[in-house]
Length: 456
Ligand SMILES: [Ca+2]
Ligand SMILES: [Ca+2]
Image 1 (cartoon, rainbow, N blue to C red):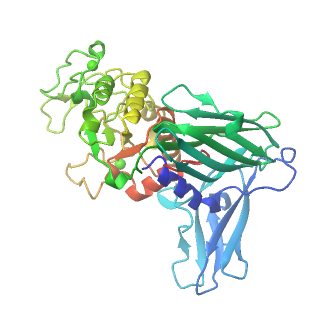
Image 2 (cartoon, rainbow, N blue to C red):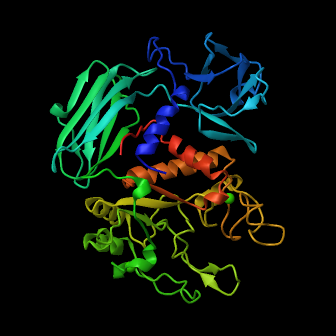
Image 3 (cartoon, rainbow, N blue to C red):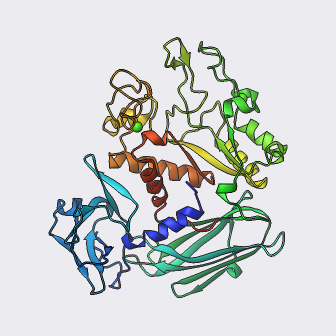
């Protein structure tokens, strides 16, 4: 997924399921429920349309979407913040009545049934909505961001303080008074004179009662020519085998098969190569880095049963948000990303979402988040027929993406990595084995919920 451009477009297409602005008296009347609207567009017929979801026990008659006379149907619901699987029940146009909401790409499951996912945000928190944003670079050294936003208070108090900062490879700095224009609930951002590189404007609204809302992030690049992912030259970096930049984190062999030990390559080695110009010298403008997640200490049987393999490749995560010390640490990853950005190189994280290693806390604490399928490729367990629930190995529990709690947690973790390390996107591992790849990708993008992202 693209961490910037596509996410912004997808978020806006989901506007129909965002909580509505409530014109009532804010704060004092908040009852724990937030209004949220569903819309449906009918063409060529006038069906009866209802919303059937977990909030009404999937009743096909309780919540009717009303036609405004032009074929635009709408219902406004009052729901507690959370995620609700639902379908639209459209009767009278000749097609199967129960259907996914064509206006909403997000998915949630009820049992093993795929549904649309209605995400109701916490409307007691103040939020900012991005109305527009534009990047320009009239000359080298004068990159500019101009953005317009507005304060959306819903059940929060009136607009109080605004926290605004510019993040880049340099230490973050607050935006100056000259860079922010406030008029009522409207907000303008105008930054000029930026050198080439990657930046993120982070805006956090605080209401008059002192409650801070979610930060709105505007990541953007200032660069001489517009970057297009479809034209990118992406280099796959196998970190452990690329370059050993830090001898102090090397570990002794654990008795694995030849070629299956950790060999010492690390994040620092990748950074050094970038700083020397090795990658941009090849014309590379994006790197896909094998997973840096914490891996098990020892070796585990490989598929042929002839010996052990370590997690040198990185695809056996044992922690949701940890970096393996054999690859480096948080400072090493931050330094790598900063160096890449300084060389005009995007960084893709290799996101492992199909499975975890059996030592992972999610498997220990939430066994219900995992499939109890067969081992892929064994008798009666075809790699394709059982692609969704088979286990690669018996020590690699397979995540059940039909469990909404599991899916939401893995998406939260993905978002954490993206924001904590200013990454530019993901390469999603083993997509074939995770519900529908397209659905997952859309869900991942849509998950960039209140922290709206725009522009690239
Ligand atoms: Ca090393
Ligand atoms: Ca799977």
